[in-house]
Length: 325
Ligand code: ADP
Ligand code: MG
Image 1 (cartoon, rainbow, N blue to C red):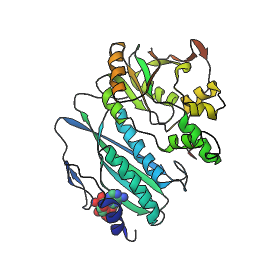
Image 2 (cartoon, helix red, strand yellow):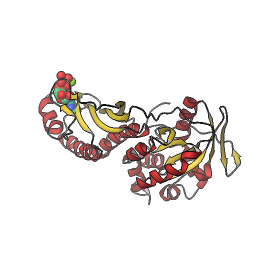
Image 3 (cartoon, rainbow, N blue to C red):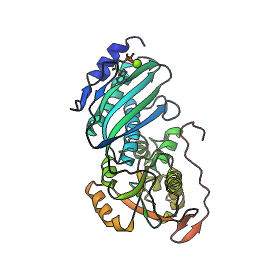
Image 4 (tube, protein in one colour):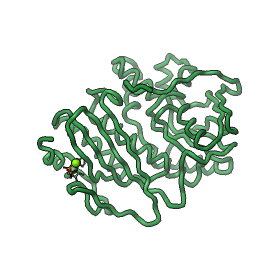
């Protein structure tokens, strides 16, 4: 790409944070990092494509936030501590205004979570952003989608459903008109990855996942990986007042949004009866809103109910802007 090196220097190299464990950052053929003893590396990659995961004219700062936050959320769901990332950026043209806004937001979030950009690739083509993140997990503690046991309680962080409502408002262009529009649009783009909560879950939860495909779909991933079933009380699902306002106070609709809204980047996890109390107090220390929404059941059982009254809802999965599922 023309001017690739000056672009990399100006926008990425000058800006990188300095972690002591980065021996060699941006500028050579590879980065060299020091991996501490007694940790395992957790590694994850996510791509965001213009027109699929965000609109081409979306605020570049919000796009950067969403790209990094979605990757940090994957680290959070495994209880990992963020360390390093690399960024493969495909740009249709050298738009320095776009890049400057993108980088300001990217480095602000990166420095908040002490994750250092150590390399990447810059190419010309349809706008897309691929990030690979690396984090540390203790070698003797793993938090995965496996491990949920019959009788464990199912929890979620934050509120659910806002991201889907935000996306609808963005697509209809009504985010400025609707009273909750600006807030819901932000919830779609500017989620806060639950990194501290994930770390607190390490010793206490039996399984965890981050909500990217929608709660109902992501709970199913835990159930499949753990070989169990579940019962969810929809009356417990945490929904925001903005979502309710957007849906004209239709609580059933809000509950359905909470079950199907993707790209929430909240955590869903399971915890044994014995660890319930410690977990609730650990998460209150990291200021994370927490709601118990159901319980793990034997394999094959999947029940949605409203305070005990069974529901036969047919829930469809979450679609991005134009992604076929
Ligand atoms: P190579 O051709 O050897 O792959 P590049 O010219 O692609 O090298 O990149 C030069 C240096 O800049 C490398 O250290 C690479 O990791 C880094 N780099 C390139 N693009 C980015 C980017 N978008 N973000 C961060 N680092 C980048
Ligand atoms: Mg390269």
